[in-house]
Length: 491
Image 1 (cartoon, helix red, strand yellow):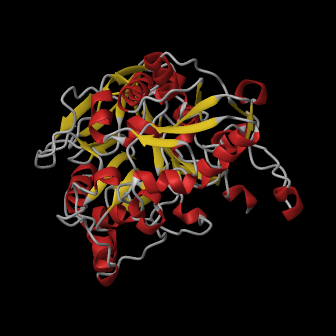
Image 2 (cartoon, one colour; image 1 turned 180 degrees about the vertical axis):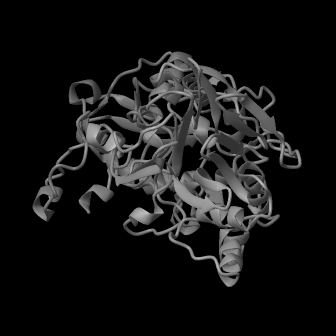
């Protein structure tokens, strides 16, 4: 079972918010599952715990494979891929958010499959359903039997209960009952379907490779298969793609002003992806520029916390004129922790993941640029490493505002009381981390970096920024029922 516990994408333990999932689908090319495996490999940063692929081939019907661990360790085996024939396939990589918090059960691994009166359908979901508990209770009372602890399985049961004549219409029915965030890639025997929730919280893009069509969470997954990026699936849009008619677009939901997740720009997405016609890398570099304007400091070296802090550190160095340097070097071969550290080895401070470039750091006043501070455990460790290497001063510059609220839309966030910024001011956090200075980018500065020249529109924010602002665009009804307190006017 050890394969179930994959290392986080960030070089330090669990002190980063994790995107829940990545989804990919392809129709119109022989061996579609091979393309899906490649696409999932490019989306591995969105979920490293487990992956699954479902394919369809007329003579063999639907086939599926679900495995714990990395895509490269499972879906590269020829014997496994031969069990997934056909020109239509979808796949999913996951972290657990909703569902079991302990070791994942294989039955929680998507895509989920359902057999309906008009044929089978499989579904892969990125996001989180905020009324899943209420839906699950209602469905169980009416006789549904759940196989998994995942909120996404609700969609399959709602589809089964719909009276519509075809699967896309049943899916529309089901998704109208669902609250929260969902980017869905689904398939029937002949169709590939993509849907984004009305607010477009999570991403989904459309690509073309030869005569085939692809749907993916990010453009970097289109690049890996040589697909041309066509466009984003729009918030509230449903596309139904078959080999004969190509892409047909539907609008099943009442239009709303979109609220895309701003943290996709800060951290989740890969820097080589394009979001809303903006390069993720360029946005992150621009965050560094804004930070250098908002929170300048006299220092000798700007140093990223690898790898997520790198683009912002480059922008900060460029704007401030302070040299950029790799003061911390990452060990690229940190796959699974190859050695179960004993207490003695842990106490020796073995640095499997990161090491300080002592020759560069010694005697310098160092600005460390990282993407976020969640619990603060990582920041303390890194600060200690830099001071041990002989730095004269340590200044933290953080490329996102303080994370003070949990996310209920498909991101694995600690409970609110474990978020450092929920209980401390910026000054108290600086004191807690014992650094010479600590500054976060302002919410307005972040909005400027993503291209909103006037900053955040307080009356009607352009993005979902609930993890920073506490303003939830969709009320997290399940969590409120469990006692979660929404932000009060005073906060």
